[in-house]
Amino acid sequence: MSADGRARRGPAHRILVVGGGGREHALCWAVRRERPDAELFCAPGNPGTAAIATNLPIAADDVDALAAAVERHDVELTLVGPEVPLALGLADRLRGAGRAVLGPSAAAARLEASKAFAKEVMTAAGVPTAASRTFGAAELDAALAYVSRHAEPLVVKASGLAAGKGAVVCRTRGEARDALQAMLGAGSLGAAGDEVVIEAFLEGEEVSLLALTDGESVELLPAAQDHKRLGEGDTGPNTGGMGAYAPVAIATAALLERARREVQAPTLAEMRRRGAPFRGVLYAGLMVAPDGTPSVVEFNCRLGDPETQVVLPLVEGGLVDCMEAVARGEAPTPLRVSDACGVTTVLAARGYPDRPEKGAPIDVPADLPPGVTVFHAGTALNGGGRLAASGGRVLTVTAVAPTFAEAQERSRAAAERIAFEGKVWRRDIGWREAARRQ
Ligand code: AMP
Ligand code: GLY
Image (cartoon, rainbow, N blue to C red):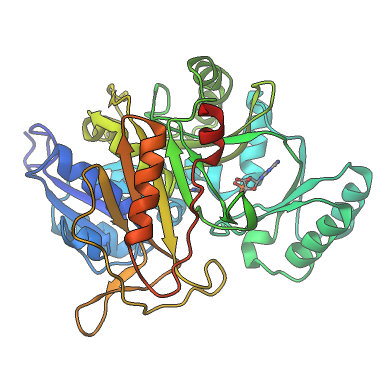
């Protein structure tokens, strides 16, 4: 053991989860399940994490304060939920101080923080993805000309981090021009839209494939499918995600093997070649074409939300060991994945995603059935100590069951019974899977 007492003496005991949404509540829950005696912190957390961890009043993007808290509490393992602190260099800071952290360096987090960079890496590595071109702030005219030369539909994307609002699927060239005028012309997304990627529209079905990686080997979490649109039947505006399920039948063993060979391996090799090895969770948003061919729609440098809330409950063991190995720069250790099914339904506040209303008191029934877990996201305790809505996505209701149909029914039934004024939710999470399994 080293003089500073920081050398490993077995599994990490003091663990910090960074973030305060449903994903982070699910991370705390998963850590508690596997390491019941751990001293667990969450920054900033929410009332859900407060029940199983010690919340620290530090914003998830306050890198200095987070680094100081890690030292103060002698945290041995930090699990970073959101992308912003990673893009700001939180993992570099903690690694520099000799601390284990699940999450890539700022240089590697560019796979999410710059879509232009991600495209460049994929092109260099030969990873299948939609044909595209990148345009800078001074290239509005060239971007408009590109639109005129290419077939609709097109997708116009802000290159930088835009909290899920950066991609506009444009059915017509006119819509694509409007999106370009807004981003490059009027600066509607601020600096995130100073550079845009215009890409071809891909037909197919999306799958979120999350891999724990030390930069070389990968251990896959069960494949999930998010539901990004606000309305049932996948209609209405894009959101952060209204629900998810796992596993996904179209993500066959053959597809996962193909993704490993054609997506993860070459991307990780290219990042190593560039001197920016990717260590942490590499989230590949895949579009699976009707003929089964996968293409990358986006990379994220972290766990997905709400995918995490449905994927972690399906891991029966080995999760924290695997995250800890990767956080220490070692190859991921095997996960034990259950053969059950999971469905998670998001309950959002009225006005989500544009102007969510805050303050509605929430009633969660005490007698929800076994296998149902309620993860908090935008919740707070009001003046009277009552649980109330305080953000866009308020709660996530996960059900795990032996069959997909049961998981879907239980998540929906529990979501129905949780009451707050203005609750916005979708009853059809997993509708594609349900149709497939009929
Ligand atoms: P992104 O921010 O790149 O993840 O895009 C957000 C969402 O827009 C994706 O989850 C897809 O539903 C949709 N999308 C993005 N790019 C494409 C594409 N090239 N073809 C079809 N849909 C896309
Ligand atoms: N659910 C999509 C995301 O986490 O980016």
